[in-house]
Length: 556
Image (cartoon, rainbow, N blue to C red; front, side, top):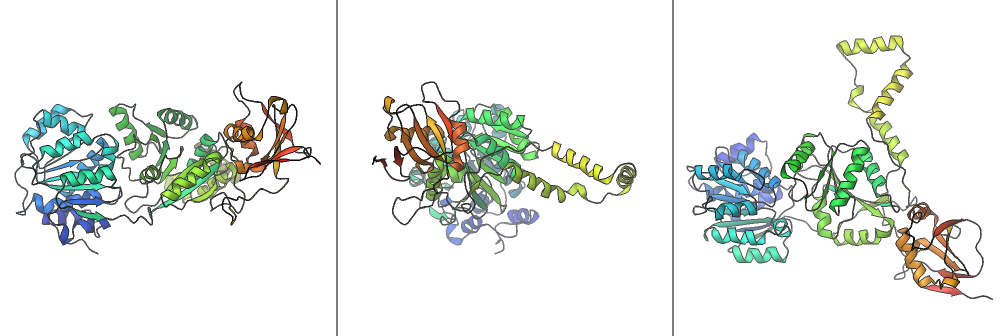
């Protein structure tokens, strides 16, 4: 479908940018039934929303076909963050060539913004807090306003801007058009729409059966305490030009940022504790390619638009399906393919399955890339590296001079050393999934409800717990203790055998190394757990059946 004629000014701008075919949301807002109406639109970030609401507003802003003289603004676009507001301003500037567009965002000189407003404009783009400030100071005159756009409305409510939004909407003329764009339409957004929109046309361009065609979802199972090593290997495996790593807390963001810098990654941090200047510098580094990894919290990533972002890594699991989709939606934008990787500690794999299922996402399960996997991948990349193209001119003469003096294998080895010197070394990680498990959720269930297959006999490693019958040891509290301290699940535990002064337990071999690492340095009040070898265990035992209750084996 070709772009239908909208307005001579906009048609020329679209042609100059080679916009030949509208996206789904752009087609929807250009339908005859949408003309002149309030719109309530569901559309993903990166689906062409800015151009869509620019096109939808054109007939209202320029009914006579010409841009009027600048004065009090005709359109107001409200965005959740400074970065998104400035991106919207840049998009509208080329779409509405010749129109005067003013931004009003936090962190910028409010006096300069006030002067721009007093000189007159056609469109104002801003954040709720700063727009509210200008209204209270009488810098912003909404008397001529014809269109209000709420961009990423769900994020604005998540960030606590509802009071400011309502203040702005109540100040605007009642006969304006209100265009509300949101990735999701939760109860609060629907309530806001009912209150401030009139006979709004509902437009939904999101196919919920397929969360995002352009994003590949991967879930990588790791052992306890391996999150940092797994992250390094994932970044090395993909070598994406741009990547975002999501953490649950600011402390985790700081820790991972420092860890990546220490290992040679060009990384920046994005968190709420940064000043506006520091945040701007970090984003500029990501956009220019000077930094390839951004480590951030969910709040700090609100409103980000990084066009060359090919990889999202969830270093900490998202708390709910919506957060998973919001994070992942930073990649796979504007027709580009992207990858979203969840790092899943062994003890949290069930939670990860619940979140992905609730989000209607089919994730491919695997281990994190091993050090050998990455070295193999590096060899493949080197063979196709553009630097190996045939030299010309002086470069060829210098290369031939080297060959005349040095052995060609020695020169190739020198190239290898230089190539590897720039690459952060991979980490050693465990491989919890066995061959044949990859590509599936890692727990195999039988036809019986709640039943889980048990690892084969002999496929366990024994550990000794320094408590026994004399200390009232009991499987009822030992079992959850092992899961908590060792970051494992019930399915990883075999026999539990209690003696007078100690207890022997079987831990599935695939997770035994990670379990041993997790229990190596416990707090003084926790029982000591050590590896006990692999010989046969005495007959007296309490046996735990994976997926079922513990039972005591009677003595004959």
